[in-house]
Image 1 (cartoon, rainbow, N blue to C red):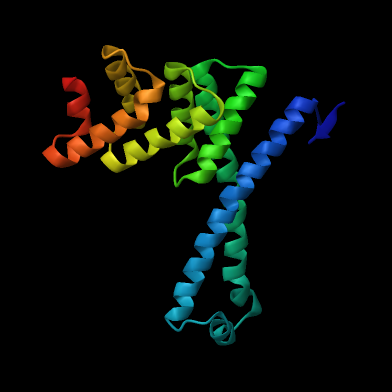
Image 2: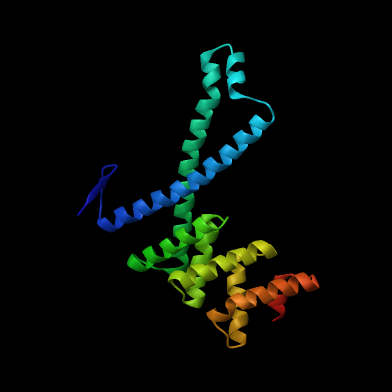
Length: 206
């Protein structure tokens, strides 16, 4: 069965992928809306009320300017969010070379990681692509270790892409595998905190 979007015929698989992108974009927009609500609450706490502002304007058009600006910002935000998700997908394909169902599975894993952590779609794509390529993981195991690497990079202020590669090499030196990665990430973090030596220097020393 074929579907039509903007004059272009879409296959069932393409339509499913489009639906997933839309769903992920919607989550990004919900986060944006939550941030906007928090901002509005702060404004009201300072005693600035939208009604009072509207009454002071001399023209109806001027009163509507903030509303128009808000709508435009939301529209721009939706486009930016959609593009951000596409960037994450592209990173996965570049790193793994996956196609078809394999690519779709990795993209779903990226959606899950992106939706569960305060991270960018690009970093989610990097983590999924690198962990899948270097550790051979898929599904829940891939999502769990990818999430741990993202948190490791954030906590230790280190490069995510490089961290996955370095940890993989360190584990190989000791004959260890993906099942040992979480413990090793914890060990690196605690030793870095205890000694003041960066995780990058620790991994390079190994």
